[in-house]
Picture 1 (cartoon, rainbow, N blue to C red):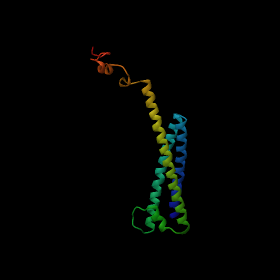
Picture 2: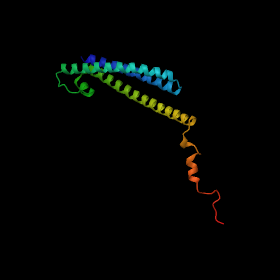
Picture 3: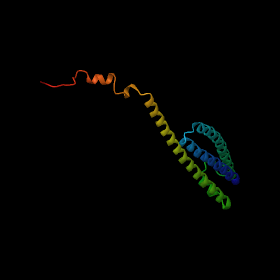
Picture 4: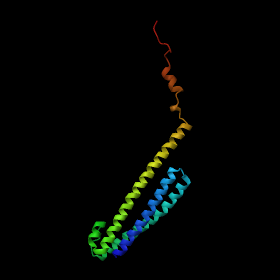
Length: 160
């Protein structure tokens, strides 16, 4: 049963690595201003996320079955608790899979944080461009607001 758990974790690692590669391609598309490519990558990402959800469900079911097989109370297990219950080669393989999964998720989070920052900067640039093309009344230096301030005062206000 622990072999199935390790296999489920390896499937998660593979999908997370696919997401990481896709995230890097999204970064490239953003930096090169290829919006059509970026949108296609978002669709591909949604497919991988659905696949990841299914794999996570399988991992949970395998973990619960393994826990019942070990005759332990049905509590939420952590990977550390599972590793403590394994021995020998299975423990080593499970630990390697857990470390690889954690590292891949950490790298994916970092890459997605970069993509988020790039998107925010792109949105700021678009907003600035829109304001330059279509300025608002408040940003203009003339109009009713500036004439109200000057009313009642002469250009040459002096006493003779």
